[in-house]
Image 1: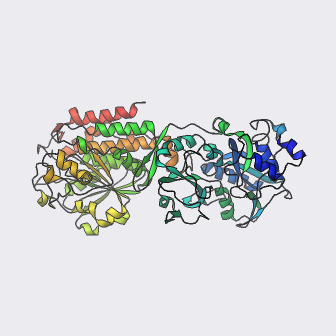
Image 2: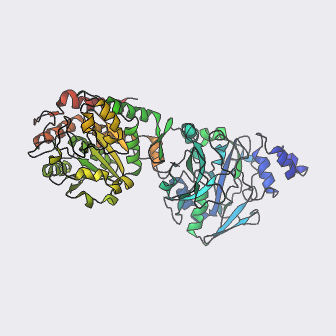
Image 3: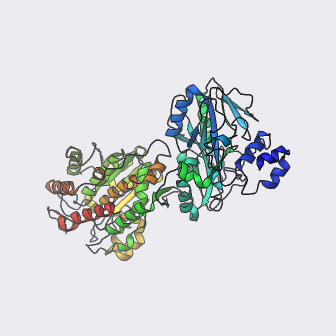
Length: 625
């Protein structure tokens, strides 16, 4: 139809009549552009139902380097087709027939069939209407999927910017280099209402061939973008506006290919489309998934903290939720059930997986006047957390009172006894004001005392134990720590660091709550029947998060290759190791905080009947399909 229209001098005025039709063929658009129509006019919002592509054309001697650059940075540069040197058509791969399957019907020409072009040389570029005069013999063309392909599908899920376009932004995310190609990732931004985040993610996750799911959701600052008065810096016009009641979502963008050419500064001339002016194929959007993409499990987008979000498979999120409920078991009848902050275990594990670089683990609740003063609860849990963090290459330091000599020796020895993958840092705090917050990304406090409203430390019976407590607990609430670090609290009674997040609940539900209720709050609170179980929960949660293909791609920002499946035993100890660890805690002289006895009980609960059983239950949740 399009070719016959051109035979009778089909002009732009006719095109304007027909361009809103959903049946607009790719061939019609290509021939219009070949005739010089719509120079520099974006293809955004046009040709719904058809695959649109970015393109880059480079001398053949750089082709293998650029091919690898695309494959190593597949989110911004999803490679659809690589031509042979000198080839101007798609060889029937993208054009010809109804789905690009008929090479004899492919009359496309990459030098004329795009609304506008850029010519690159030595780091500079200039626009061109067409490339028909370019000698193409040694040039290899790379066709890269474009997110314009799915914008029609997202029409009811996204809020459009005031210009009707998508913002294109340069991040601080470094692409994986290949040969001369090495640049920061360019992204496109769309604003999505919170209630549509899950649907948006699941719609786009299965179409990696056109950038797939977002590589970042929420906080622009996390990818090096600065926001002023609701607008992201560095964006022309209004395309960087963050619309009200929406979350900014960022997709890898094919302009990264142009950025790669710019930064490479090649002396040879290279070519690309002009930003926003795509090559329109004959491949239907509905066929993109089956022809080019791979499936992902159904996901949910989790609101973490401070405007940050992260996706996780629904199955994994449900498992972590079940673990959080299980470790909330209250055999000591302390009334902690209502203190659960739903989702905080999962949020803590996602945040640790995404952003942790150096985690300080505050440990040691002094319950006794003679040494070792610290009770046995929290110690094994701290080791479990450290083990899991080291399994994802995060630096770990244990932080304790300066007087906790026995505890520091025990935790140091955990590496030699193979409970830890690498030697931990040991910080014995003599003066909280000297704590170097800038060296850490996160603090995790497990079974660590907090002051009550009277400024004193209390045990569960409401007895003042301030004379036993050193100054390490003060670190958790230092102004610079609160401002700069993410804090996770783990507690089982309401008097521990972090439990200030549920202060009214402690007062209402826990015996002696009005006296013991913690004042120190946190970002994420893990309430548990025994604090050691919170350590098991974090270790299991980190394993599950790192086993999720949805999270893996998001954490990698769509770069590199999928991570090797995690080994559960590297995160969560086996039953034999867990028993040995508890035995060594006992041998080192740490006593039960309830009974005061040095035996295989924690919080008055027998190891086999409760603690071994909890580990078995958590492992069974992980193994469930």
